[in-house]
Length: 197
Image 1 (tube, rainbow, N blue to C red):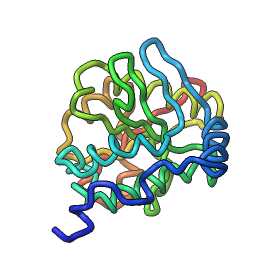
Image 2 (image 1 turned 135 degrees about the vertical axis):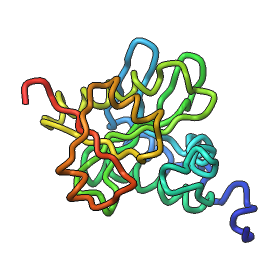
Image 3 (image 1 turned 180 degrees about the horizontal axis):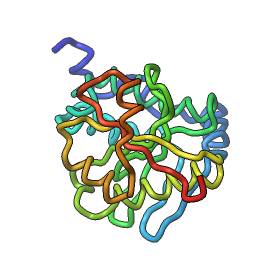
Image 4 (image 1 turned 135 degrees about the horizontal axis):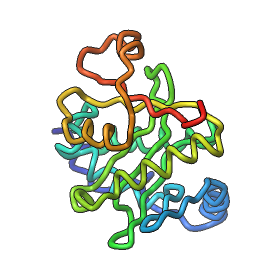
């Protein structure tokens, strides 16, 4: 562990009031907000990073190449957030009735991904309540309805049985051709397909 890992909050993680913060709030307000029966998916705000870092610096990130340092988690958080400006899709914070920042759902695009991904990151306290399924359905519906995508994939670690079960529950099917093209024996590719596609 180095000195950077010990630092609880880096200066870049803190809210800085003023014109810049107001401009950020206006930009964040342009991110589509999705309301479901129990959840609100909204644009990430700087104070959501603590929840994101809690996930990414813990064993919960083991199927995503982690756990990461807090600095690496910040790089992931800002990369997912920046995708709204670059691609028109990205990371949403999941606010649940029981707790704000219950986790995150994304229509993300990692540097090495061949196509955009529907992904989910939950805090351990939010597990077992159907939040992942509800959030993923909402994000997937947005991709199909508003972005006019015919399909979207989820990359799931082969050993992540819980997530694989969720993919089956969502009706996603293994895409063997996409797995062969990915050339990663540890990753399953699940494809979600729009009904009329």
